[in-house]
Length: 241
Length: 307
Image (cartoon, rainbow over all chains, first blue to last red; front, side, top):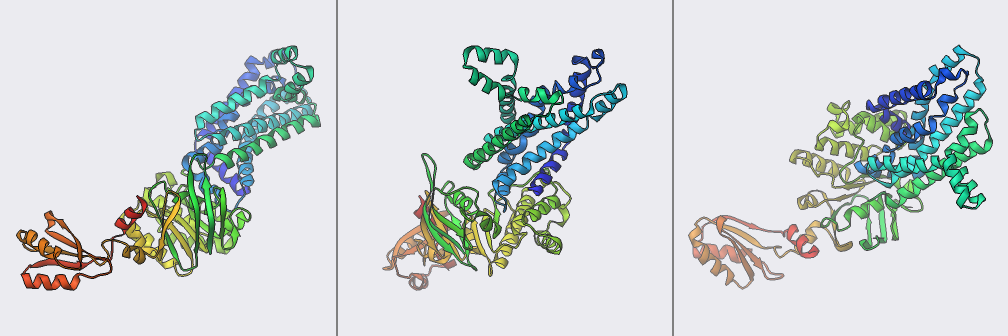
């Protein structure tokens, strides 16, 4: 698994695309924080304006990271080479997913100047910021697992991207007040709550405020596990097409 | 040993491989022949553990490909159709990656890397990314990848496709060298390749095995087996020669290529025509530019069985 992970991560950096991606991530993260989020104007020493945008940022950027995971292997035929090596399908799926996750983690770590800035300007609750970083990383994992599964369904990276954004959007919007209100109006309360609890947003909001609830972490872990399992099923069914 | 028993692969509307059973033993080079879409690649993919059979069983060195997949894969070197590899990697990094997946360590890894690089003449391109290589080099990288762990079984899907004649020769020499202690299965649609490297050939058509024989054995099934082909020095004698040859008792049929002044006499089943023809030519004064005995034409056998 480690071998697959290493190759995959190296292949991200084999093209300038990785650097472009990280640059876009940092530029967007910062501009959302400072302009749309009015970081200075709020006058508060925290990174809420930074983390609040992450669900949207990941929606597109993690899809761009995960789209090549399997679609490219299928398109070039290397999937046949990889899966006839003495490794299990599960090792391949996990190795590739972890490489994508690690890549996003690297981009996330590179936002550290924001953390330095906020510490320079005031006395933020660094524990809360750390919790929010963990929450953000878990959410990224969820998006990437969805992307991995979508990428396994097609040999076109563009289709994988579009599918990932579409499915990611569903998981995101389920937690938006406008959707949850509408859902509780027409559906039984238990179903509406259930739907809302499937959303990234519901689980991320608490953690972004610095509250690490084991259920929120568990949610992400299960979401990742579910979509990685779905990836292996999709590959098993369609790898030779 | 490779063993398949009633191996089948059905898709919804299509039976790609239908009840295929065979065994291959060490020292054998099995050529897998068949028209495009006959099920060659599907069979090889099932042996390599890439797709799962819908019926029957297959095993590599005693390891069932479905229940003991990792051990089966470990004893196998596999070149997929089209020799896919990661374009953005350099040749060296790619081979290192495969060596790691194949669990080669330390001194063994160094030695095996050096061997395949030398054997497939990859020294010159080691630092190049694979996407910048010519088709021939990519194929050689694919072969190097399949050989790196010195597996007892090699399955090569069209190993010489896209190579120039020199490179083809080189790959065939390599296969012949490895043949004595390994089990090798190659698929090809180049019939001369079967004669050059294979000790046995299986022809499949529409998913079924339609012939399983040595290349020589297959050739004897040809109408041209023991046929005699001759060329006349004087094209004007063609008509007369044709009539005289056709009148010989052992001759079943005479084929003529007028442009080359060539006649081919096909014998009746089990009979020979060479001596009779020779005598006839001397008696009637036909000057011959060329005379040879055919062992049989594989392409003709191939067409007869698979169409």
